[in-house]
Amino acid sequence: MSTTKVAMIGVGSISGIYLDNITTMFKEIELIGVCDLIRERAENAKEKYHIPKIYDTMYDAFADEEVDIVLNLTRPYEHFDVTKAALEAGKHVYSEKPLAATLEEGKALVELAEEKQLMLGGAPDTFLGAGIQTCRKLIDDGFIGTPVGAAAFMICRGHESWHPDPEFYYKHGGGPMMDMGPYYLTALVNMLGGVSGVTGVTKKSFEQRTITSEEKCGTVVDVDVPTYVTGILNFDSGAIGTIFTTFDVHYDTQARLEIYGSKGTLICPDPNYFEGPVQLFRPEEGEYREMPLVFDYKENSRALGLADMAKAIQTNREFRADYMQTLHVLEILTSFEKSSDNRAYLPLQTKYKRKAPMKNNQIHGILD
Image (cartoon, rainbow, N blue to C red; front, side):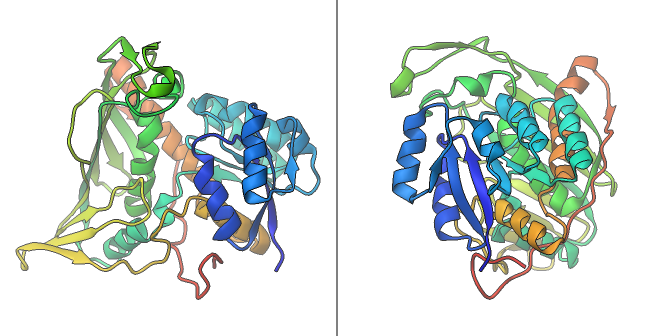
């Protein structure tokens, strides 16, 4: 079986699940090299996962003729520079979320990818998992009637109590909407379609945060981004959605993602995961009923989107997590603060059309 060859740039905390899944789950992609500014991380990955190459710099990876796709796992504010350099070198790029830290950066990357005729896209790919794909099918098949609204909530007190290096969550490219919003918004547009405009109200509740996790305990971080973000979404279909993300609230459980229809309500799984319970409420039944998951990839399947990109390259079909999706989501993410600053409704510039739903394949790890 031929494989699409991948170089990983950035071997930080998120890389572990990618390394596991690329080397054991997905059969049509092959990781041939890794690169990290902290060389020890790359060396550890090479030894544990039997990776052939370590690149001294990312430019060495981009110059490697064997590499088909660059997997960009750097920090959010680094996404633009890494992706831009990889595209300029003629490589397809799959990036962790978000596509870039600003809409202007995202547009520049899309223009470059189109000029070079290269694929560009990326995370989150949780929407391709069993949970959200099952929800999409239930909606498309009319189980809740015509969608009229949606509500999404991500509520927590921030990452400084447990994350080993949480400072970047409060810097440019960070914050609860840029960090966790992509999961919710990507799920929402896949279930309900594109967004035509937004209204936002945002604030920074605390000027500083103190890290209490062990590695940097006591370090004081200046907060540079909004940490309490509320938004209203006007979907192209006419449905109205609300989204709320915060790093400022003490909360004992994970809030819900809900889709409201003319004939019922759907409680969706946490879009940060690939599975989770799907509950359908219909008034004639009078109670919530858990629906069976009817798609593959229930486990943590990060790199599923990367495998989908590889299949799209191999077969010349559409890529489900392409730049039209990641750019549209990026514009939504960044528009809430702009709307709040201007105290005005903000029409969106980008357009979005849903790609094909997932198809089940007989062999786990090989896509349609």
